[in-house]
Length: 383
Image 1 (cartoon, rainbow, N blue to C red):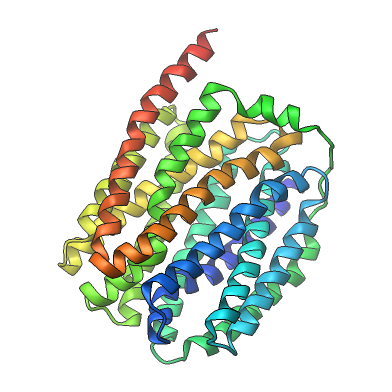
Image 2: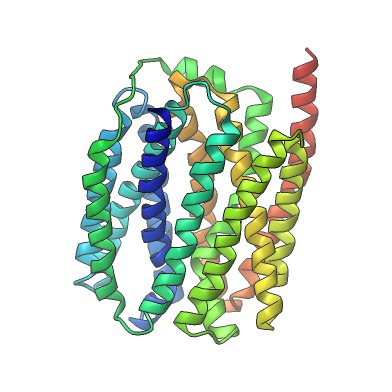
């Protein structure tokens, strides 16, 4: 039963990531094509992430009080509405409203899917479940970019939104097969006690510093590939998809290493180094070198996702993991919202490479936080 649940969760989330990632890196290019400037694009990305930010913590808390599958279904309905209407409008005002609703829907879905993943663990080792769930949804994300990169070379972006709408509608049907989870009610003091521990706060700080670079991926990554490297849509899909698919192997290898005794500190250190340094190598305007840098970067990101999912699984009790994992996601979303709003205008004014350089530095700075995190964690284990 547990394996069937895990496989269903993995299938739904992999298709959802296929769908959203097939759009994600191409939004900025589409916005430029329909005449939006850097500030307008930055506002749309920021609205999407800020609305997600506003719903993240309440959504996480709701997952401890309402079965997660119901919230997943609400999120999918909002995403479906967003894609369907966007396929028929280019009005900035309407797009603003739709990105507002889409931000709510996407984040409700993500928080609730993660919550359902954690809540259905039934005492299993995190590494084995993470190896399946995370690696395959990253594979789906990579295949999504490969697919859309080729399709968008021959199809209008708004018509492609109809394809993504049909995929989301399919997931809505599949979601009725998801299990219902037990619900609990706790006062906010219980969650506060969970979060205020020093090693948990440092865990959140590491995630925040690392996640800043994701804002630059929304605003600058696609335009960099198009304008600096001169890639076509199929070439961009191949470039991005190949790098993301490499994350599939990295997640599985990282979890296998953990099972064989490798310390998490090693995984996280390599993750931050690979992510930051690879991102810098990526901006070298020679396609094979840039692609190599991107693969290194994505491998680092994959290791950090292993750290994120393992950390949440081990730091929090299952009955409050909805609210607590929501707060961790809120930390990540806050970093993305802030950096999206800042990096949009910076990229359009000074070049797409500048946000990438800045966010590479913030990723590497997380190594300083990691050192203190490990010190406190080791001290806690001794006590």
